[in-house]
Structures are given as structure tokens and as C-alpha cells.
Length: 145
Image 1 (spheres, rainbow, N blue to C red):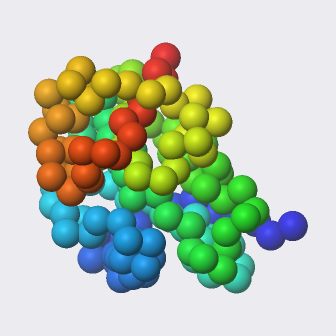
Image 2 (cartoon, helix red, strand yellow):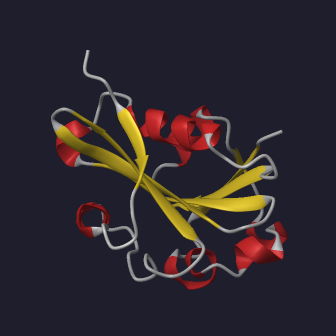
């Protein structure tokens, strides 16, 4: 079994992340803006995938989860989410996300459907929420405490 490494992607080191998101048709326009952290998963064979976290309050937006096409099907998406959850600051009480196609995956990880109209102001004001993800995207929330 190959050892997995979960790491913070340094600002300016987003080339592979950006390419992976573009290939998955996920938004990239706001990657470099403040308030976003991105994490990667890799092993000896190279990059596996990425996940992002946005915000600075008790409610944070999980965003930009992507596993490289050649690395899919081995549970790496679950690993990325679980690793992200383990490093959340103690003040984070809820994770929020929007998805066009992965709602069943996130439900299996404990996220529940929510009403977009009831999203906290800090989440509703994110670009992902306000303009980048369509109104048809599923909105899911997970209590972390």
C-alpha cells in the first residue's frame, strides 16, 4: 500500500489544481482570492486530488473537491473530505457545499440537504454560492460538532 500525504497547497502552486478543476468543469475564477485554502492528496505516484475550504467563521464552505481521472475509484474523494474534516479549526461548527453531480457521494459522508434560502450570510455571500454555482446545484450541510 502506498503512503498517502495530505498537504496544504501553497499559494502560487495551483497549476495542477487549476487544470484538474478545469477538466472536471469546476469553477476556477476565484481560486486566488483571499479566504480560500486548498489541500492536496498525493502518493509516490504523484498527485491524486484536491479539496478546498473557504471562509473564516463557524460556517465554512467545502469546495473544489476533485480527484484526477486516473486516480478515481479508489476512495480518494472520501479520504480528501475526511482529512479536511480532521484539520478544521475547533470553531468550525458546520460545513456547507454546493454540487451539481455529487450529492449522493456527500450524503454518504454525512452531509444533508438544506434550503439555500436558509444559508448563513457568510456562505450565501461567497462567489461559489452567489454566482458560480447554478441555482439548480444541491446545497448540503454537515454539522461538525
